Image (tube, rainbow, N blue to C red; front, side, top):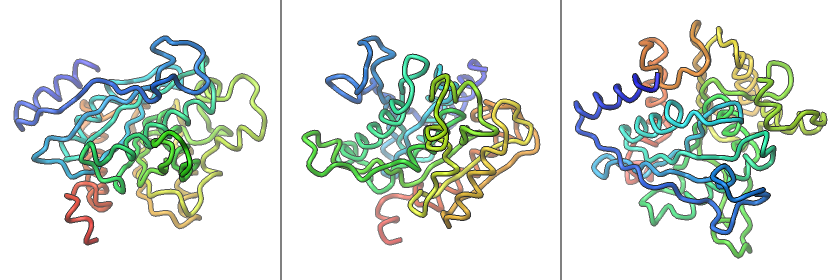
Amino acid sequence: MKFSILLFLFVFTAFTGIVWAQTAPLVLWENGAPNAVGKEPQDIPTITPFYAPKDKATGAAILVLPGGGYSRLSDVKEGSAVAEWLNSLGISAFVLKYRLGPRYNQPNQLLDAARALRMIRARAKEWNLDEKRLGILGFSAGGHLASTLATHFDAGKPDAADAIERVSSRPDLHILIYPVITMGDFTHAGSKRNLLGENPSAELIRLYSNELQVTSETPPAFLVHTTTDTAVPVENSLQYAAALRRAKVPFELHIYERGPHGFGLAPNDPILATWAARCADWLGVQGFTKAKSATTAK
């Protein structure tokens, strides 16, 4: 699968002439992450920037959260490959390496995602980005983390000594691909255990069941799932969409009749692969594929 994705990207690059600008990972906290238990790579959350080509860049950016059940990261199929697809739309991308269970439980994953979005927003001018067009995209457990940030963000701390902590962690939109949403019925047991621990309280289960945390302040959403997903049941997306509907939050939901869990950009499935084009259309509606001068008049 990894070979087919890399081959797809090679062929796409050869025919389009697009070269993506990946740079070295950036450490989120220079003096160590909160609650860090060591100084090994798994203790150091980072973001890897993939800047859109200058001749295509719209100024929008998306933070990409790979899945992996909160125990590993699918950092090619649901990370770098997705970042390069976003670059082809003129959108810069940042792939998050967040801390994982069982070494780390909540709230550390949310702290990492929030810090990553704050960093991008705080440094938007330096990186030629629009601080008002910053989204988040997550797959599977990464989708749970994305929906957690979309429902548990805060405005920042204006008096913080750290300039990054002064800005909001709210994404301007979120994209959820076969996401884990709930920690109740229909959850993914491994993700729940790695995030919440072995015997979480009812209060903690409710707090991280994001279908119960949607408000009118939750940003617009785009969701994709299949009815035959046996790892993360489609009810996760259906329940979240229903919550968005009740809160009058704009959303777009695509349910495919057939398909496995974990298909990423689905380079070997011409039907499932159409989700990326539908998502690109939606990003256009949200103003992410237009230059800043075109969106400011909106």
